[in-house]
Length: 182
Image (cartoon, rainbow, N blue to C red; front, side):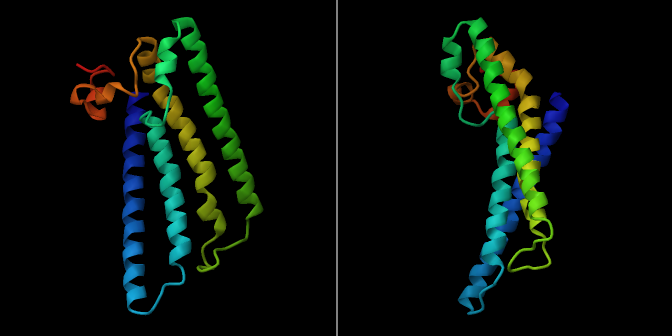
């Protein structure tokens, strides 16, 4: 599982970086064109789509690294039996939410079948909106792949939120030493 998480993490990292570079380039080109008096008609639509893609894929990457806001302090205050139940319930609710999001996103794709972007009529809306079900499924996969390490840390009484900030540790050194900070 760790190898799969590492490969997926690398893929998502490069995907998000690539999308950010493309978005930056489009914004710079659009500014230059606007200064020259020739605004690009497709800029706003494409920039907003790229921002949504960065958000969805970046959220999946954050899920893989357990970088979303959590409540470790509350979990760690619970006795271990209650902690186990709380983690299971929380994880089940997160996965359930993203299953519903994936299903809803797929439903939206079927409704938008045949539609195209306003400014670039050759681009199907279903391609741009595919990020909703794909991002939701990726989030579920990332959540499941990161669960064993998260479970181990929480059950051992280690905060996954605060440990990386202690003693100048970085997220990379935190994960390479098994989740504990030395």
